[in-house]
Amino acid sequence: MNGPVDAEAHHLVSQFLYREARLLDERRYEDWLALWAEDASYLMPTTWVDGDHGLREADDYELHHLRSGHFMLQMRVQKLITGQAWAESPASRTVRTVSNIEVREDNGSLLVRSNIVLHRVRSTDDMEVHAASRSDVLRPHGSTWSFTRRRVLLAHGVLHAANLQFFL
View (cartoon, helix red, strand yellow):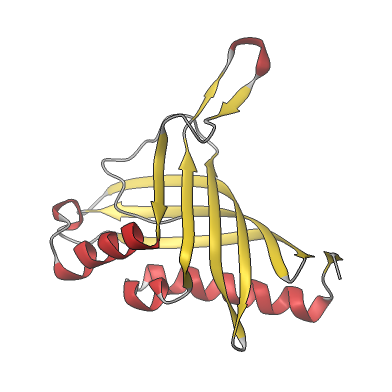
């Protein structure tokens, strides 16, 4: 069946996304990585205003803030948990808010749209706020799902961050 899912499935997917946000906020990166399929991709294309055409996002052949497969996600997580991510020393405090969740079924996978706002505090008072829309593809994995693709579009064209040692 293709199309919108029922209320129960929507609730379960929402809980899955809320749990993902909590795992990241608690810096449980290995548990977060376990939510991702081995063939997953994580994309955050750059965006800019293109003359008369309005906001434009980079295509697959242009610059991205992030373009990672599972292996690169794993490497980033390893840096974070071993303390080798010098930009996260001391570790940032984060609060993620996930909203506007829409879920559709498509040939056995779930297409999920959501918005996220990340509040990130570095050191004592250095705060960043990042807002984005996300498009995810979830594949059934046992009694839950695995992320197979995430595309993050920042609401702001310029990334206002000291570094990119966070996940949206």
